[in-house]
Image (tube, rainbow, N blue to C red):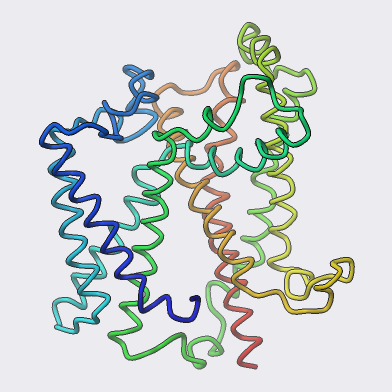
Length: 347
């Protein structure tokens, strides 16, 4: 499957785009289930603040439906053309541009914090339920809501569009993959900055983690006292500390991108000790996390840009602003790790 993805990814993206294009027609015609803006209960609950939470906070099916229909159906045609390797001179320029713009819109442009929340809290909720320490009355139905799953699905589709663009570029260039001379020739930006980016990706989330641990330990950090007490009663700060714990674990694992144990499984891993770490085992999670945290950060940037920061709001919004730094650094670190892995194979 991993060896043939360049063949089928375009068709998968085409099917998703065609389905969303058909839904756009349905929503424009008055059909139910519009998942953005005025059809998103969580954004509706934000009232006038909806646009800060999402660029689509004020979207309506009457306006967004036709746009989704045209973009989706056009995307299906573009994706099929890319999958078939259409090589006309103008298609080599136009098709990748459409694909990369679509990928950027879906993975970052329309995103907010909710996809990150779903991904982060799913294992936490699973462990909490198993240990019986999750707050009573809180369960899967409260986490896996349609308004949260829809942007996550769009994000996955955006990654698919990016992969389809890469596959098309390789197909029309006649190269099945990266040529050895491209990997081994001289130093690159990734070679020069990969290690620095890794340390930045390690350190940046620790600021967020420190604030969440402080709340769990009884330090309000200046946020509204009533809100803080309510969070204590609801177990909100316990959940935040659990999320911060995963953040610390993720930060430590990030160092594997520049450490020996990120290339060869350490001795304490029974059954795997001494074996080489498959590069994609590190690269894929790192890139997905980088996309998730960057999309979430852009939402908090909008909030801070509009509302500013005060002594009572900085712990709520400022740490997440730096998620964009985390995301970019982690993306660069992952690509640098992948490049070094390729260099080792070709050496």
